Image (tube, rainbow, N blue to C red; front, side):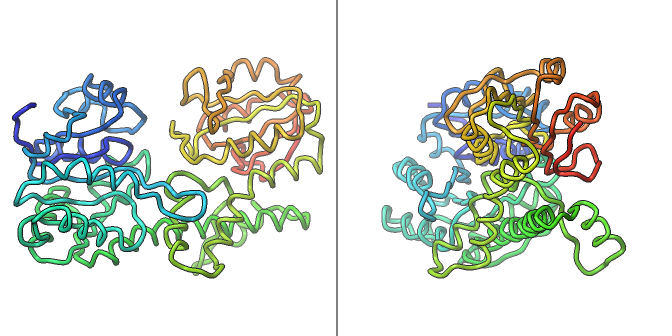
Amino acid sequence: MNMTNYDICIIGTGRVGLPLALSFIDKGFNVCGIDQDENTRNIINGGEMPFLEPGYDQLIKSKKLKVYDNFEIIKNCKAILITVGTPLRPHIETDISYIESALESISPYIQKGQLYILRSTVSPHTTMMVKKWLENKNSFRVGEDIFLSFCPERIAEGKAYEELTELPQIIGVEDEESFKRSEAIFKAFGVDIFRTSYINAELVKLYNNIARYVHFSVANQLALVADELGGNIYDIIEMTNHKYHRSKIAFPGFTAGTCLRKDFGMINEWMPTPDLLLSAWKINEFMPNFLVKHIQKRTQITGKKVVILGASFKSNTDDVRDSLVPKLYRYIKREMPNAIMVNDYFLGSMINLDGEMVTNTSLDKIKSEIADIDIIFVGASHSKYSEFLNNLQEGSGTWIADLYNLNKNNQIFYQI
C-alpha cells in the first residue's frame, strides 16, 4: 500500500467527486481517490477525464490525482469525503446502499482525529444515520475522537470548475470542531460559508433542486395547456416575461437527470400525502408522451422513419443517467415506425437507452436522408442541433417535434 499521507481522500470519483478532487489539487491539497470501477480508475490514473467537464483537462493530465481500489489508504488521510451515488428506488425510497457500502469499507481503517464529510445528495436524517453508524461500529465519538459534517455539492454539470469557487458552501454540523475542520478545507475556494445543522444542510440541497424541478414543471404544464387550446407557448412566455419584474416563466423542455428527477422523492419519502412535488413529477415525466401524442394529431408515426436528436439528460453533456430520451424512444417504438435513428454527437458509436443499445447515427447521414425522414424529435438541446435544424432544406415534408424551440421559430410542432 502506498504510504503517502494525503490531506483529502474522495470516495467515489464520478461527476461530483472527480471535479472536487481536482479542484482541491488546484488549491494545493494533496488528494487521492477511491473508486471500485476499474475502468474509471485506469482512465483517471492515465491522465484523462472519463467524462466531459470543462476546465479540468490540464489538471487531470498532471496525474497528481491517484485513484485506488483499496480502502486501506484511508489510514493515511486527514479528511475523507463521501461522494457516492444515492439513486431513488422504484417506490419512492432513497437508496443509501452505496453510502452503507462505503461506511462498511472504511470501518477497519478509521483513525482518531479524522474528519468525515458526507457530500452525496441525501434524504433527510441521513447524516445523523451516518453519525450513529460511526459511533456504533467503533469506539470513537463524533465531535471528540472523529469529526463529521454534511457539506452538499450544488454545482451544475459542465460548470463545476467555476461554481466550486463561486457557490457558497453549506456546512452542516452538530459540534464546533467538526465545523472548524470542514471550514478549513472549503475556505480554500474563497466562497461564503454557512454553518448550520445536519438537517438544514440536507434540505438546502434538496430545496435547490426541487424548486428548479417545480419551476420547470410549471412551464411544461403551460406548454400542454397551450397546445391543447391552440395557443403558442413560446409567444405567450415571451410576452408574459417581457419587462414583468415579479416572476419569470421558464421555457418548456425535458426535465430530468440524476438530481432533478429524483430529489423530490427524498422529501416525499417522509410525507404520506399527495402534494405539489408529486404533481410536478407527473408533469415532467409526461413530456415524452406529450410529444408523441401531439405529433400524432398532425401526422402518423406508424410505418414512418423517425429520428431522435440527443440522448443525454441536458444540453452539451455526455451524461445519459436518468435521461427522459429512453422513455421517448419507447413511446415512439410502441407506434410501430419503420425505423428509429438516434444521434448524440457527445456519445460513442452505440447509445445505451436504459439497457437497449442503439446505433449512434451521424448527423451527416441524417441530413443526407432527410427526404426520406418523416419525423424528427429533439431529445436534448445540444448546440449543434440548432444549426442542423436551421439548415434543413425546406420541402422535405419532415415534421419536427422540438420542445426546446432550437430554431427559434416559436413552434413545438412544425413541418419543413
